[in-house]
Length: 396
Ligand SMILES: Cc1cc2nc3c(=O)[nH]c(=O)nc-3n(C[C@H](O)[C@H](O)[C@H](O)COP(=O)(O)OP(=O)(O)OC[C@H]3O[C@@H](n4cnc5c(N)ncnc54)[C@H](O)[C@@H]3O)c2cc1C
Ligand code: SF4
Ligand code: SF4
Ligand code: SF4
Image (cartoon, rainbow, N blue to C red; front, side, top):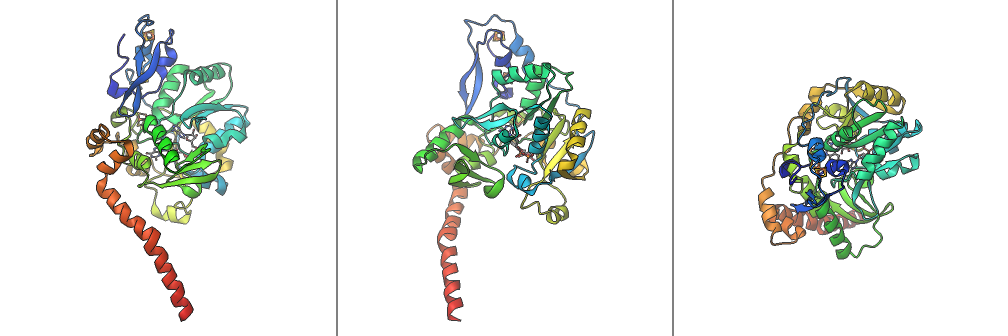
C-alpha cells in the first residue's frame, strides 16, 4: 500500500490513521503548509482498511439540506450572541447537550496553541470551543475512539466541525445511532496549521510576547481581528487584511488543496444541522436586529434528529423562517467549492525563496502599499485632525 487517496483529494481528516490496525500511518509529509499521510511499509499488512474507509475514496451521498427548515437564528442572551463567532447557536446547542448529561466534541486550542478537537462534559468548558479557530483542526485517533465508545454506551453526543470532519466521524461511528448529533459548519477552506504555528511564533518573538495562551479571530470586542491573548487580556492585535496569516486565510492561499474541489460545498449537507454566518440576509432585517454589531447564524435543520434538537433549544433562541434560496444566494459554499485564488501559484513560488511573512508582502504588494497609507492616516493624520478640532473648539 503506497497512497491512500489522491493527494489533492486528501482533507487531512485522520480517519485512515484512526482505523489502521497496525497504527502505521503518520502525518509526516508536508506539502504547501499541510500534512499528508505516510504509510510505514515495514508494518503495513495490506488490509486496505485505510483506503476502504477514506472519505476521499467514498463519495458521501449527501442527502438532507434544510428538509426541516431554514432559519436566521441567534441566542436570546445578547452576551452569548456577541461573544460567539456568529449568533451563538453552536454554544446554545452544546449547552443543551451537556445539560442532558451528554458530551460535546468541538475545536479548542491545546497547550501548544494548535487547533484540536476535544470532548467536554461541563458548561464551564464551553468557552474553550466558542469562536472560530481559523486553522485546520486535528481530530485525533483517541478522539475518534472516545466518540464511538460514548455513542455505543448510549450517551448523547454532539460533534461540531467542518463538513469533511463530520463525514469522517459519521463513517467511523457508523450510521444508525440516534444519540449522535452532528453539526457541520459551512466552510470555505481549512488553512495551514503548519504556517499558523510558525506565524504565531514569529509574532511572539517580534513583539516579545510572553504567556500567550488564547487566540481569537471572531466574536466579541475584536471580531475579525487576530488577537493573541493571555486569558482575555489582548497582547497583540492584527487587522483582518493586515496580519499576514489572516490575509492568507481571507485570500485563500493557505487552504488545503482538497478545499478547491470540496465535495461538501453544496446545498446538500452531511450534518443533522448546518450552521454558518447568514450572509445575504435581507438588509432590512440586519438593520432591525442590529446584526452588524452582534452576529446571526444561518441555521439549516436537515434531519429529524436535528429537528428534535431545534425544538428543544427554541426557548433559548430567536429565529426567523427564511427561504433556503436566500441562504444559497448569499453563501458561495452552498453552491460550489472555493476557486483557486489568482495569486496562489505566485504565493507558493515566493514561499520557495522567502519567509512566509515576506512572501505575503511580495505577493500582495499593492494591498500592503495601500495598508501603509491607511496606517499613516490612522496613526498620524487622524490624531492630528482631532487635536486641530479640539484647539479650534477652544478658540471659538
Ligand atoms: C474554519 C472555519 C471556516 C468557516 N468558514 C465559513 C464560511 O466560509 N462561511 C460561513 O458562513 N461560515 C463559515 N464558518 C462558520 C462560522 O464562522 C461559525 O463557525 C458558525 O456560524 C457557528 O457560529 P456560532 O456563533 O454558532 O459558533 P460559536 O458558538 O462561537 O461556537 C464555535 C464552534 O465552532 C467550532 N470550531 C471552531 N473552530 C473550528 C475549527 N477550526 N474547525 C472545526 N470547528 C471549529 C467549535 O467547536 C464551536 O463549536 C466557518 C467556521 C470555521 C471553523
Ligand atoms: S493497508 Fe491496513 S495496515 Fe496498511 S496502512 Fe492501510 S490500514 Fe494500515
Ligand atoms: S482524506 Fe482522510 S482518510 Fe483519506 S487519506 Fe486523507 S486523511 Fe486519510
Ligand atoms: S472546504 Fe471542504 S475539504 Fe476543505 S476543510 Fe472545509 S469541508 Fe473540509
